[in-house]
Length: 185
Image (cartoon, rainbow, N blue to C red):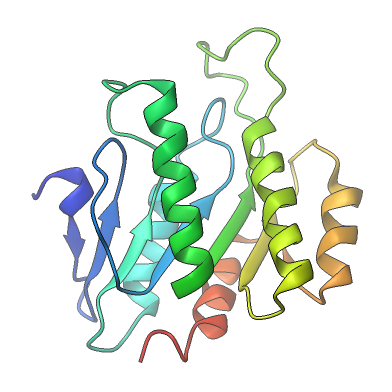
């Protein structure tokens, strides 16, 4: 297996290259940023990687920007810098997928006093702002039926831009691939 930020998955169809913190690389290919909760959430990002590996079927390598690090051997500031860089890249050359996963209360190391999915909600607001000024920004939105955040506000923002809200991660991944067909050929 290659290093996590260089891992390629072939799954019989086409390669995806998964990028994870802390490594920051120059990149000019199409990509999808996996936005959504990490702390207190199941590893839904790994499931999304597998969905994309089976959905993408051409000769172009598609970059998957997965902010869930394999280890915590970097600073919070570095994580923020990594996420901002690849969010911008996906905004320009692909899509941003938002999956609001349900909180997993069995995860014991969740920071006390931290609102669940707080960074994801900030990134969502930022991305909706981009969409307000550039209708070509590609956003995919999904909410786990067990998610307990402010679902109405997320759905309202999505509806303003006619973005469907999915309740299934696999369907959301399929939708994001459809949004990006012109980028991934």
